[in-house]
Length: 102
Image 1: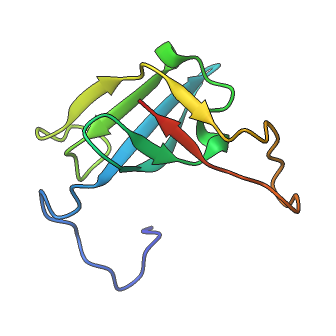
Image 2: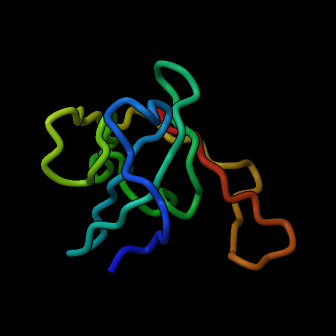
């Protein structure tokens, strides 16, 4: 069952700013979205990357599906910057749920 009702399928190249972020934690792969800021930076949610090691994160660019897309290009993470508050509990009054990936 699809999660979006009355939507339209994306066509290749339509959402060039959108990326797929894969994080491996234990045996599960968690997936988040991100947005391209420039040639080397992605902005995403803090909770997607706060406990993951760099080598356990993959950034997929150019895909419109999460598996088997011939346009997909996988990139590794060089650095992650979390918000300086160093605290983000969902529902918290001041939760700065933002991270920048390089």
